[in-house]
Length: 319
Image 1 (spheres, rainbow, N blue to C red):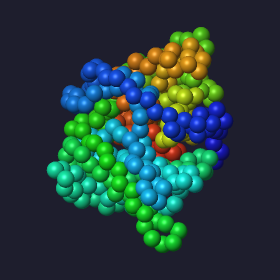
Image 2 (image 1 turned 135 degrees about the vertical axis):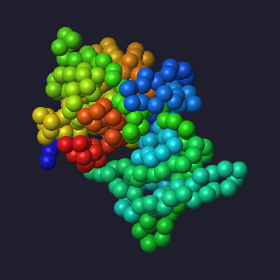
Image 3 (image 1 turned 90 degrees about the vertical axis):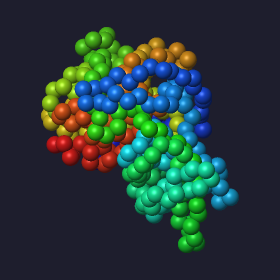
């Protein structure tokens, strides 16, 4: 099936792989859905989540580096996604394996050893390695990532990261946040709703709170298509449109731009205002997809780019 990928999105992604910036903090509490936990993440929410640097490994002697695309990790089951780079570019080798370790006082306790799934991106030149890992406690963790080499040997890349008691954004099994978002009928132009060149009015027909409450499954994407500035975000609105075209009558499909003033930015992110919906959902990074069931419960969450197959697989479980 065909996928429409905007040339602007592709070029910005490639140019933005190394773009990072530091954010400040925000103590705003999470707005809980009816079934959401009242527990607030103990770490600090960035004031500018669109400028948060990604977690990266050191470059190994083999020239490998890991870039983690899923940094909002809480105790429980989490989708881990990362890209691998080498001196030749993005690594797409199958058969990559991960070993998760809980690290404390200089000791490393092995928890899981799993094969990853390679999620090939629409344009085929790269992809994301994913696995679902269980974190049984908060603290310092490490992934040992084993990459098959051409000569049959194995190259290993360690990646350190932190797991918190509670993730910022709603985890699977929690209530979706019933946020009111703007619709196409409330603005003069669709440019007020999205930064992207793909402008599909169908994705702005219903407010997110109405979608959560209308007893149909919902797929919501929080993303700013024209400002995809890191190595793990991609054409997520294109994926949302494709899903909408196939399942329009049986589910809701909502795009919420990461910025509240897309029409005023004009390429200058210093003018950007973070969307109130992003604040209410406590999103600490720039691209997210959530699948929500008929009762308003989050059944799947994807930080960074998620392929059509990943999101469609989660949605099919609700249809």
